[in-house]
Length: 261
Image (tube, rainbow, N blue to C red; front, top):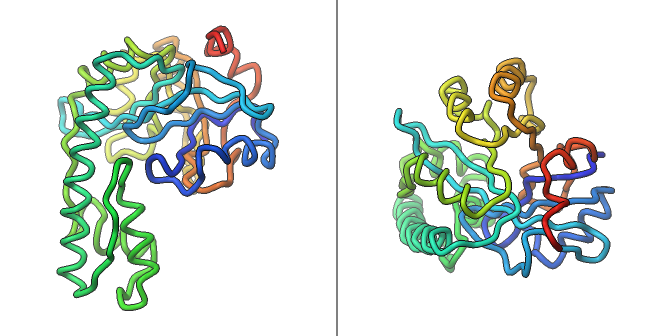
């Protein structure tokens, strides 16, 4: 098991794990450090890095941005000390998330002739919709089918989010975080273009459970060429932490342990 899992979601965005239950989930996975990186959401932490029940918790965030070529990528910020600019941007995004969520739910209800009866609140995301579709006996789709046929990026019920430009998002995170990393670089339609953005960041997420065999050579070249740090995590949306992450030595290179707790 890795020493640090630096990509974990909770019910504060689209995960199923309660924030209060993160330490217990970490101990079950024999993980010593967890970065809570909910989408576009700040955590109620009193410091960038805290201790809870014997587990180190890093205040993180995952922020989606749009590059000049139109591709949307996710940035991971670690060691967050919220600035006015970051608070304003997360509040703006949460308003947009709620509006977009209601539109997607309405599209699904209309298309399937059902009533998902979802409470669209702060932190709402498409996994909430997919779970509701899966749970409805009349929908005809399971969780994966909901994404594949209804609410995926090319689906008939999809509604795009309003995200900020890459440079603006990068600057906001750079002012508020100790480390800014490019998330899961090989998941994007154009990984080469995505990796080019890493030159303006601190790190790249090298360790990630892609669920398929991947060639990390392009990621490794990007890290070496730009003298970048490495991050890694499971991208857990459930309570199973530690599927990917960093060794203790790699985590210490990030300098997050020096942030006061």
